[in-house]
Amino acid sequence: MNYMVRITYTLLPMILAGVCNMILVKLPVFAWLKRPMDGGAVYRDGRRLFGDNKTWKGFLGMIFLTGFWMWFFGFLDTAFDWAHGLSLFDFERFSPLEEWIYGCLWGLGYVLFELPNSFVKRRIGIPPGRNRSGFVGNLFKFVDQADSVIGCMLFMLFFYVPTFQDAVAIFVAGVVIHFVVNLMLYAVGLKGQAG
Image 1 (cartoon, rainbow, N blue to C red):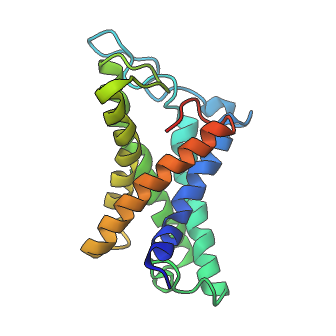
Image 2 (image 1 turned 135 degrees about the horizontal axis):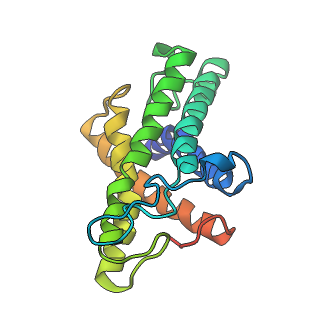
């Protein structure tokens, strides 16, 4: 089986959670959670900590949805021969509850590691959901994809320790897939910025 197919399949719970979370954020449900995480607070420079785009709805939605998709892929692994062993994760070691917990941890790593990037962007005057042109813009375009991938990889260590080769492949595939999915979400109107 193609190695990169296995890497991509392993990342699918996170990918699907991200897409579902973008849809959830746009839906008129759980409106009471659509509050900025920073509560409107400003830093000493007079700018918001994170901005309006970082809401509790998106934060908690990503955690819950990653838990769901991790559980779903664990179910596929135990129910279907074609799925068994396709993921790098050894789902046979996990109970359904552990799949939920590990998925939620994985999602937590994703959303936590987006926050420092948002904080820095507010400090240099980049509005939420926007970017700059030139070197700074390109740098943040990369960081926008890589920050959450790094968070996912660190929190993945709670339930899976990759080899060095797997870690490199997960990082590269994660960044590329994140970028491509963001372009697709932008094309269908679920994201305000391409990339």
